[in-house]
Image (cartoon, rainbow, N blue to C red; front, side, top):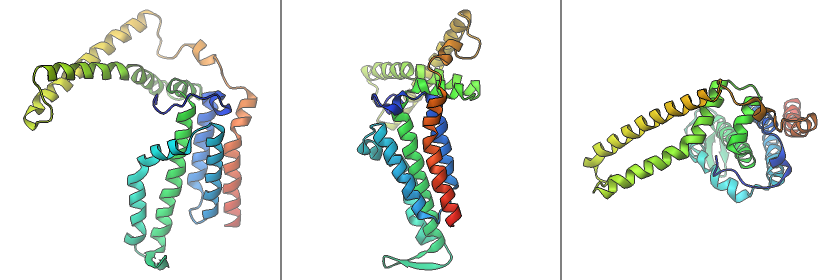
Length: 251
């Protein structure tokens, strides 16, 4: 998440995390339930996403590069019109299945919009704030606590793994060769044991300092959203709801 966050001073960055999470999730759900046959509605959603990215000063190139994560699903969607059965239609000189054509469009349009909304949320909200926002939205404590510890100690474990690799290489180990896989597996096991022991020590230290299984109340209360901020964030799901409602009415 640290690599996804873009340091900016925009209205989107200044919004409390819980309102951004609620707005993005609600808008995504509305996009998903929109009938796939109403193509113009997805064009409207794309305009909303572009406006949102402009408000948050998230570059289009940055979004395009990171949205490549959905490429396998796009390839599947492009193959559906040729693989699906049913009524055949001609598009650009090619005979394709109507049902597959709609199915492929459905995957690409909704998947891309969902990915872009998620990227904009990640670009305008730090990992710490995302966890705080989830906790304020009454997300189960076990999830937020695990995510907190994971983000806090992921870099620590990464550094430990790099040091172990340097130690192996300095002793003549070369993990490129298959017969040295045993040494690599041993290193992974040792890293797991070190992580487990470190986690036990950290947990005992936290309990001795008053940890009771949730974030400090003062941390959660600081910067909580106001009614005006909730109303401002509601603009996105409201606009998507208008587009979806119009699409359903016009059928």
